[in-house]
Length: 440
Image (cartoon, rainbow, N blue to C red; front, side, top):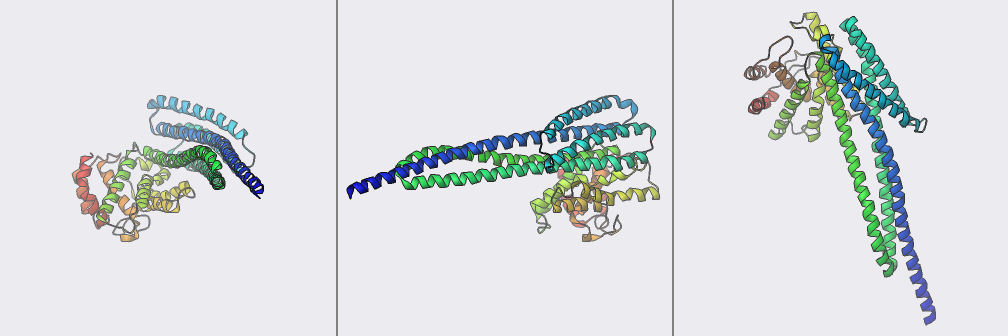
């Protein structure tokens, strides 16, 4: 009986040690598999992300130089044309790298199709801009505007959509890798727990290796999480920079430097924060709403891209016919905003951006355009945008007017309360008077 018990005990101890060893081996295997997965996935992610971000950055620089060339006189173009040529060469060199990455991709996949689309669309975009430069000296502004709307803008939108979709795929890769890693981590903990329960000896051995392996896995888990958050922030930054770049491009056509969109966005944010501080519109004014309205504000005048230069830059008062053409930019802006970010951003953000572009020229008394909305029929974001837009336009110098003093501009806004502007928005704006004066 004792012998049998001894043999049984030895068998139990052996099995316990064997189970402990299996647990340790599994933990080691999990770490090796996860390390391999980590190296492969991160390598692919960094290669794709670096390539598309480099193209996006160069395109932004190219768009800015192109806008400067199109809006400046021939005598002032030499240096800008040289920068434009250098940037174009950088883009074409990057497309060679892009093509090498494309050759290594699996044919017929969504990622390969998007990469090919970016490559083709950017090449077309560069070639069309060469045509646009040739048109500048010999074509009238209407033809240039038509060519831009027909060929240039759709390609900008297509490239932006493809690069954002690639960014989303990158996020998906990171998320999938994170889930697989967490699965391995859970399994590893289960096996280590079994080893602890079976025998004290296995526990001692398992504790040493388990904690070491789990610490390594958790460190990589933290890296994946940090990388995922960093990628999301970078994608948002790229999108915001793209929107600001397009808005600056539109502003440059009318002789503005792009400061108008930055100043109006800042004023909109100040009004929103003041409203939240005082508990106004508390059922609507969430942090998310404030962020969306502030980020969407720079897009309020995107519709001006469809207005001919002769009207947009006219130094005198517009004729009734010219003003009717100018008014079309509001409805056009709403459509352009939806075309650019629709399907990429959340619906709530797209709706807010579209409302701002479409209705920031509506008036509280119903005499605005394009729809003749009045009172609270006008979306709140557009009512706030209207005050910020008009105030900044008043204090800025334009081709058709001199700047107004801050005191006179505040007085005009106050007089138009209940007529042009929402009285509650005006009240909040006037409370910020000292702060706005201090920032001059």
